[in-house]
Length: 483
Image (cartoon, rainbow, N blue to C red; front, side, top):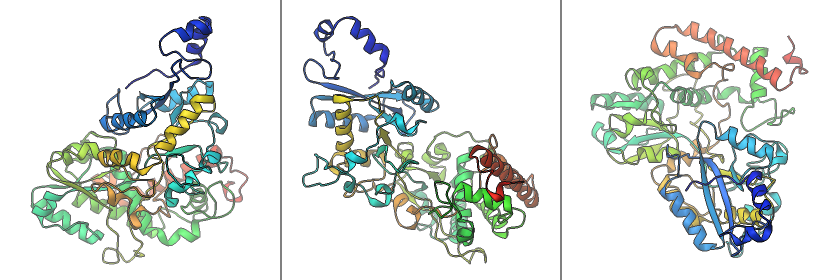
C-alpha cells in the first residue's frame, strides 16, 4: 500500500467545501479525524528495511496490517513507503512543519517537542493483554526497560517492533561439505575453517567494497582486543557529564585520543587489531573484494552468498529476505572470540556486537491529536502483543523485543548470549567527516601501505575527528580539549 501523508493543505482544501459537503463525500472525516461511518484512517511512514520495493514493506507486513484491521475494523492503516536515501529529510521537514502523518520512523531528525512522549501511555495497561498492569512490562527489560530507548531528556518517544543486531550468516551445506562445525567459536578456529572452505571450493567470507564489511570486522575485533582499556577510558556518561557508561562514549574516546591515552602508533592493541583484521581479509574474504559493488544494504556481498559461492557473510536480520532463497539452508552465528591461542594481547573477552532496539520503531508526531492519536496508540499497543507479531517475526527474520516472543531459527544467534551484549569499547574511533572507513584501512588490507603507515594515518584521522567533536559538541571548556 502507498498513501500520501495527510498535510495541512488537504485539511484546508476540505474545510473550504464546508463541513456538510465534506461529510457527504465518501469516507471523508470531520475535524476529529473520524469518518462519517466512524472509521479512523492513520498513515505510517518510513523506509522499507527489508527490500528495495518502493511501494510496500512486503507481504508479511501487509498480512500483519490486515490482521490488525480485522481486530480493529474501525481503524484503517495506510503505509507510506519512503526512499531509504531521503526518508529522514522528508519526515524531518514534516515534523518541523507540524504536518507529519500519525506514525513516523524513529530515525527522523527532530526536536523533542515535535513528537509525543509515551511514558504515561507505557505506564498504563495494554488493553490487548488481559491482566497486564503496565504496557512497558511486555518488553524485554534488557532492550526496552525503564532506562532503555530514552531520549536525551530521559523520555521514551518510540515503540520498537523488533531488535536489531549483526552477525555471520553461514551456509550449512557449505560447512558440511568442508567439514566445518558451526558455530565457529574462536578466531584460530575461524582461520582453520577458512582454509577448509577454500579447499572445498568456496569463498569463505563474502566481502565487497562497502564500508560495512570492513567496519563491522574492525569494530568487532577491536572491541575484544582493546577491552583492557575500558575502565581507563570510561570517563563520561552518555549525556556528556562526568561519569561512566556501559559503552565508552564518543566524549571519552575524544579525550583518550587528544590526551594520548590511546595512540594508534603507540598502543600495541591497536596495531594488533589491525593485523588481525588483515588476517581475516587475507585468509577468508572474497578475492578482489574491493572491486565488488554492494548488492544489499543488510548483507555484505549478498550476491555471492545467496548464489552459494561464499560460505559466510556479515549481515543483519533485515537481510533475511536477501538470503532466504540461498542455495542451501542458512543459519547464523556470532563472530568468533579472540583467545591467547591467536595473540598474547587477548584478554579472553568474548565477541560482542550488541542487540538493541532501533530496528523497526515508530513515533507519534505531536501534531497528531484526538481520534487519530488514539488510533495510533492502539496500533502500537497491538504491535506489542507476541501473538499478533510472531508470524511477522518468523517471516522477516526479525529478532523479538517482547517477552514471550521467539526468535526465528535463521537469525536467533544474532540476539543470543555474550554476542547480544553491548560492546564496551565500541571498536576504534571513526575518521573525520568525509573520510570513509574503507579509506582508513584498505591500503594495508590490499598491500599498498605498510602497517606503520596505516597506524599513522589512523592516528591523524582520529585526532581530526576528536577535534571536530570538541567543536561540534562545545567541549572546548574541558581541560583536555584545549590546545
